[in-house]
Image (cartoon, rainbow over all chains, first blue to last red; front, side, top):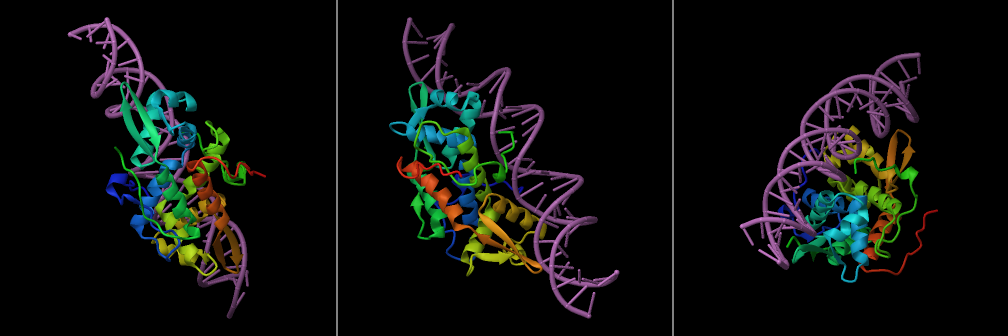
Length: 130
Length: 130
DNA sequence: TCACCTTCTTGACAGACGTCAAAGAGGTGG
DNA sequence: CCACCTCTTTGACGTCTGTCAAGAAGGTGA
């Protein structure tokens, strides 16, 4: 797939189509799900997510997150942006600092779609960039 | 992460540690989970998976799978290998043809890990790895 | 206004990924 | 053995991704 996957904004805001309900997964549904999975499929982003999930309000500012993964701030910013673009995090300014917060429903929606291996239905609005 | 993610063989064969149980996700756990998510995070592989899941025994041979995604056989073979390497599919020869079958537990384990992280703690502290 | 702080964007680079054509490997049947 | 079939490996190509340094953008306080 040399073709670029679309940004979340350009695809269905609802995550995600069922995985095992029919023999054919619509290509658009496949892309929508792949975009979200790809956002999660990175060790750094998973570590950031784990840190956030363990915080009181499942949120933290960039300055706290960079040390967690021991990478430069621009790099961390890049990862956070990617998570936000997939609806997994939201972003909010507090004075000088920026707080990122987990959107649990987004992760849950992905998990449920995968478990579609047991299959129920989809449809849960995922928050999209603020 | 310019560093190559390891093959599944080189990491824990069981998926996966809890996502939200502690503030820090061990880098090895993060990699183990990322490898599996990355295997799923491709539209073509999701389509292949959906097709397989819809089959009677959740299995099919390569010759049936190539038409599903309308790609060349080598490419499909490449994707199937990747899914197999992450433990999501198993492979078995039947005479001339090769059958790939879904390992539902593998997908379920990933889904559960995501959900575990999302809804906080309990469950599954068993990091499992054998 | 200015100095300062936190965060993001840009540009560049190496490495990984998805794709195909061509050739190889494994198996069947004459 | 040989022709044939199915599937995988190899090699090459363009694109995407993760990383950092440098600089810009946004906000605070004097």
